[in-house]
Image (tube, rainbow, N blue to C red; front, side, top):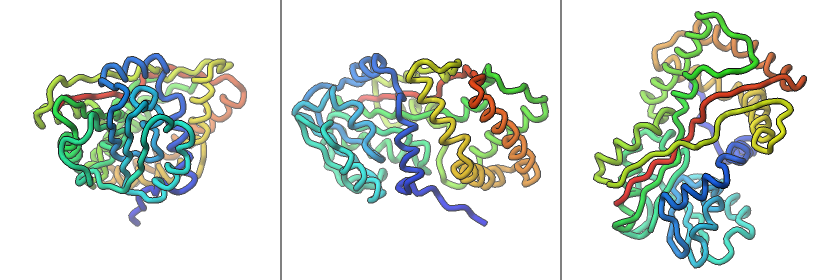
Length: 307
């Protein structure tokens, strides 16, 4: 049976949009990124696939004074929630949330000082077409900016953590699961979770200049007793996403479908699921006892290109 795509407006997934973005960037890094992409007061910024408006309220302090932010999404329920959540952060400027398709935005040519997106390209069947649309709506000299992950490379990495070391067959199977799942995802038109490192070349083919890419300097680092807010937020994300049975089962069911589409077998996925269940129990027990630790690479990149 074919699984359904996630409806991000459902309460459990909308909550995920919030907690995944909590402490996503260090504050001093945001200052550097804002300067690097040329944000200034009074600019018009368009956010494609805006969700609940995370990029708007995160970067508002850099451009919002006499500025304008327009967030586009194709999910009306998310847009309604975003409007309700605006609160005080829009002071000094103008904020709009509008329905729009990433491939065909209701915006005139050369309209915005900057067009940006976050974790959008990774879900699209034709990311280069969405990039072309973002280029179209930006003024000459303005930037197209994508904040996207390379989750495929991240799951291939070897973390240093308190979980037991798997035997080589289990280790290789887990990497096969991730690799073939992403292959199947692309073949099914559901996006590419390794998209970030491919975007600079797409920008080049679209004729953008001053192309550059930076990696979020946050490392996935957890060390008991989890003293910093960054670490406490990371523990919260682990519990809500990886250790929440409902969310985890939904994600794994979708992974099964893409894994089979990528060339994997039912037997391999069932075996990997059993291994994952064992490791989730160990992780939960270690977190409860305060003995879990981990250090692994970050996954999020910022990519820019100038029109």
